[in-house]
Length: 467
Ligand code: SF4
Image (cartoon, rainbow, N blue to C red; front, side):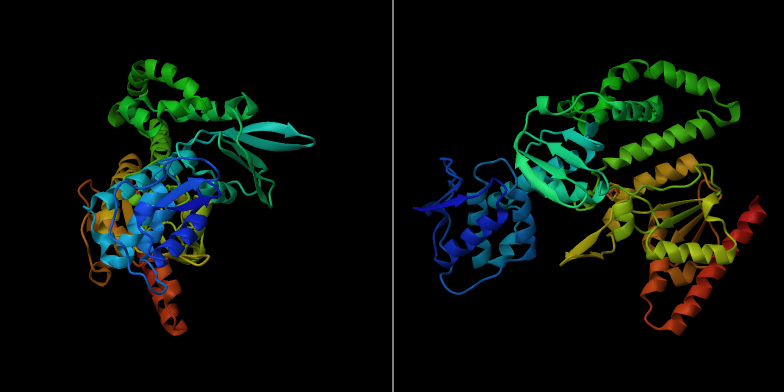
């Protein structure tokens, strides 16, 4: 029996090194015993598998590595052995990763899925409370993850709250950020975390303000915000009262809306939009929410006559949580200014609200969303447009055009002309500003940029004509 002691429950590197060694020595999965530290226990797989090839170094498909890095964070004690068994299979036959119906792969997929869901919930439901620390301030949060995800999520919180000093306490481990360095400590208890503070008042005030009784779906609330997390969320204290008062509030909203615009236009539209954005924050309709930092929702006046739809947030937008703030956004701003179109009066959003990318070393390389991902996210765009009701929607690029029109189009064929939409608005299609950035030839870039500005000029003129 080969015994492997890993240093921590999420010790992927330790597992990988040991698994590689065992596989190269031809050790059968049934002859391995995996454990964390000195903990005894049976961590071996009960599904003996054929021995693997016994010679030479080997590599495995990227898909295996991605899957293993997630699944290993699961609390299931068999995960190390299951992954080793899969490694042996994949080493013998890399196509085994495609065999989605195989029980072993399905089981590991389920583990990875559970971990992704847990990470997503931690991103969404950690709430910091402010505590004094000498002359400074520290923000402290308590969270109880289902799996060993604390280290794996640390980078997310560092990127999101870089300038704050914060600690996240969990029963298994605590992480601390001082603005420059991240450190790790032993687990804590709920009693170690602070209680109420002024930040809670902000959260609860904000949540009450954006709560929209017309969109109340208690089932959805329960699944998006499971009760086990309620105790950590200051706004959760409001939920029973808000639900209880929902019908009266909805009736009041309808009663106070102008007759021609029931159930709501401006004030209520603002509330509906804020509630929609909150819902989108925890969207899991497609897999893109997993690797991205956050949902990047649209922004701008919710009574805008003009809406621009881009493809998806880029690297900088993903970190900032705002659309069109990166290099393409700057080029877009410059083109709008040249065309005399005020960005501040337009609503700007994306067809897909999460950043899709491929990690290459330290860089995150943009990847075009698939038609399925555009379709999944189209629901959010539809809701945004239903609230805003613009006169003109400008689709920037092919993915945006697909989302706005509901079908694929060739930009060159539809560019420069209005297309009527069912609700009476007009759609226009032009290129995405990132297309201009990617053109290597400066002369061609200048030419295409001038075309882009000309498209925006046309839209501006059309908007004036419709006013
Ligand atoms: S990309 Fe859109 S549909 Fe997919 S998870 Fe994000 S918000 Fe939801």
